[in-house]
Image (cartoon, rainbow, N blue to C red; front, side):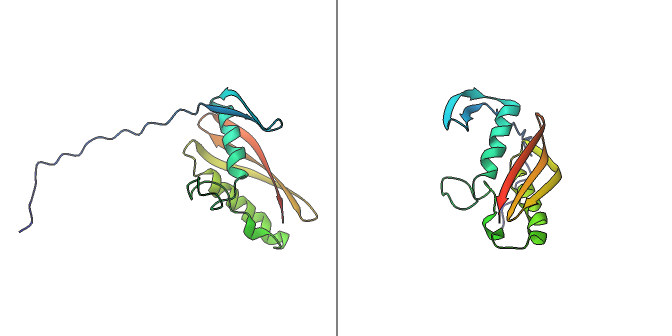
Length: 133
């Protein structure tokens, strides 16, 4: 006999976005300086996500970072669409990011410089990533 409970009620669950207030990382000086919030915090989060290779550091979730190591030695024709896919996939893991588009690539030898637009809940951010293949 399987118990039946007809009195179960669905509970309304409301998702709450966490605040984006975080420590401000001064990249040039390699120091923490105060705090930052909203769009500047997103700029910093984008930088950190795109400069952390996925699966290499056990402190991070497997959803954090970008996978670019597999592109080393590949032909540029294969690399360009793959960089776009990897950047988009990495950034959309953050629920504050709603879109990644307007990719533009410049190649010089085995270096690819990519610029793109990231749409966040705090506004649009122009970002870039350089990949050595």
